[in-house]
Amino acid sequence: MRVYNFSAGPAMLPLEVLEQAAAEMTDWQGSGMSVMEVSHRGKQFIAAAEEAESLMRELLAVPDDYRVLFLQGGATGEFAAVPMNLAGEGDTVDYVNTGSWSKRAIGEAKRYATVNVVADEKSSNYTTTPSPESVRPKEGAAYLHYTPNETIGGVEFGYVPDTGDVPLVADMSSTVLSRPIEVSRFGLIYAGAQKNMGPAGLCLVVVRDDLIGRARPSTPSVWDYAAMAKAGSMLNTPPTFGIYLLGLILRWLKGRGGLVAMGEINRAKAERLYAAIDRSGFYSNPVNPDARSWMNVPFILADGRLDETFLAEAQAAGLTNLAGHRSVGGMRASIYNAMPIEGVDALIDFLKEFERRNG
Image (tube, rainbow, N blue to C red; front, side, top):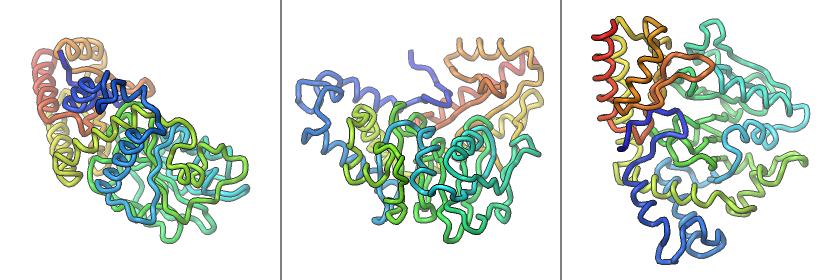
């Protein structure tokens, strides 16, 4: 029985995509082999990888002067790759701290550059985002980095910072493909795949041409954007199954009307779930209303002693992976692209019934 999987990642994938992958598992495109067995240098796989890049460019409306790279190492690898590619020895880089993943990015960047934290939401316990006027790069900064959506805390920026001529770098792991974005406002976007793009193991990087070719000599070649762009993201053996499944998911997204339609669906799902939480005296969301995430919705029960009962009963009802991150506790419902509105409605119905019996 399929369940509604509210995991923050690896996350729920579209059923029709999984069914197509299952049907093709042992014989992909008449090859007599799985896509995981064919050569990444063969014409069939090269065509599949090129289609995935083309669809990504189409859906995100990527300008011609940006490269689309499919890398490995996840977003955590990019925490190091970004300063190694965009900042020289001794350079200063600016970061915004809005929670757990921002902190991780800052900690890694300190190994390679002088980090200046231009805004830190510690005073709100990371339940807010900074005002737009406070997110400004300092003179001489090589770039400004921020995390548009904090997966753990459920905090999301409602705006794109204006950094002028300083390249803006964004970790979009939790939000990529969830709605339209204006790529030209960013110097570099990166995102792990395991939320809206497919299985874990693939990392998307969209980087402007003028930011390529700056990598310091010590940068590993697999994280050197210029080297990977020249090799078509195949300097080494790429995550072939991840690229194949990404292509299927991008086709699925296009068939559903693209990112405009997806954004409308995601907005509706989030608004419906937050409204149910806000109407209740039994559940609460800790995030400031103007900083609430569309993708990750944390909530707290009025009586924490009921947490384990809640999770067990939710599991029995086919609502899985609702436990909050181990660092914060409580509950969290991640409602990425593949989560249908019926899944959100099923969760809302469960919330009401659990409150009726325990409130």
